[in-house]
Image (cartoon, rainbow, N blue to C red; front, side, top):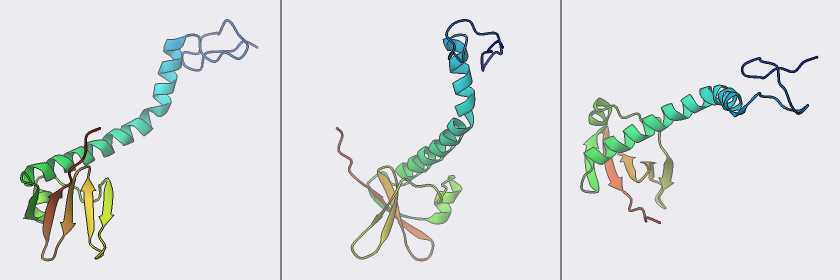
Length: 119
């Protein structure tokens, strides 16, 4: 029984445990297998970057107050964050990288920026 390449289905010549006819077929096959997962990560990263940029635009001085409606109008998605920081008093700041926000009463938000040391 002749073994065939997992990507192009051509007969394989060489070692008995060989699965692909060459490196291009191996790369094609693995990229195709990971494409769904990669697309999902790209989508989430795009949303996180967009959220970060919105927080950056609304908070040029490092601390500001805005309404949640203004954030939503710019396309901010409150479901996606990179971290939650809980203070000793129990307040929860939600962050998109170094830019964060604290949900206040009356659909208001306190925007903050955390200084991140560059290494």
